Image (cartoon, rainbow, N blue to C red; front, side, top):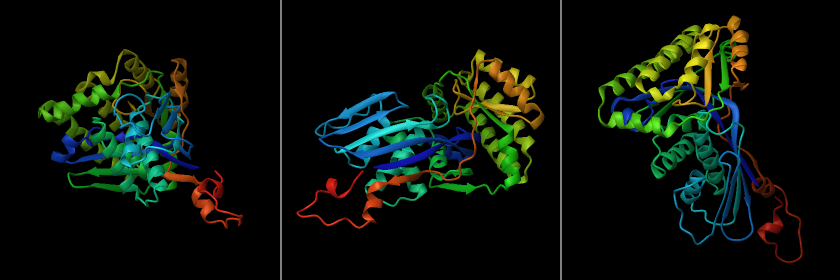
Length: 358
């Protein structure tokens, strides 16, 4: 048995500038923080032909016979594409488990891809770096499955921590932000995360944004330039410990996103956000591209309790969290553990299933 996990993330600034049509021309920058909500991939050898996949996040069960060619449609497309990438068509049972509900906008699909890439590469005996895991996961999701998503979430899930990601045509640079314990504690205490109960509609929003970039739409490009500048300012504010400025940047960026793409919000989200502001929140944003999912709010300490109470009164579920600094990792590899233990002598020849206990 092999158990791998990857964290989801909170995007603090710059989302959308990690999409290839934009960063290949102008360069992109995203600042994000991973949190202790994880996506797990439990990989087991199984008897018989084919691969079995069950998932709590996709709410699906899938089995592909060994002789069938992979087809990239239907759920769960992402794990099927990754199995194909590693040339695996039989002898595995995979259980995917998420600590967050579907449609939160916290980058769960990227966490799925990263956790599976980490787990399957380990199964194959490959020692991939965090950057290689992120690149592989992004390639499968964006290129193989033709997703309009960017790369920042894959890198966040692979590396963990609070980072500034710099995107250029040739490479992605990862800049861990060295925040001291006092700043980390203060930032954590000022960020509130709520699930609105309505899953977000990510692909349509991202597809329209990508089309605007490809058409050289000046309104779209100008907005993305401002969002990239907001990422630069957020990085500087974090390093300086000027946390109040982060709330102000979040508010300005949210207003810009709503003007750029009205579907990122709706009347309910607008009402929730305005009620939060009236209770003292400085700023906020929907997690991910918008349209629903989770709402991230920045509050100074004296406003934290009033804002949280107002959100609960509106029917939102508060998600407690801490920052994650581990990134994608293998938590258990029974085969590797067994290989390090002496195998008792037996009469006759043992099959690998008899020699290793899972």
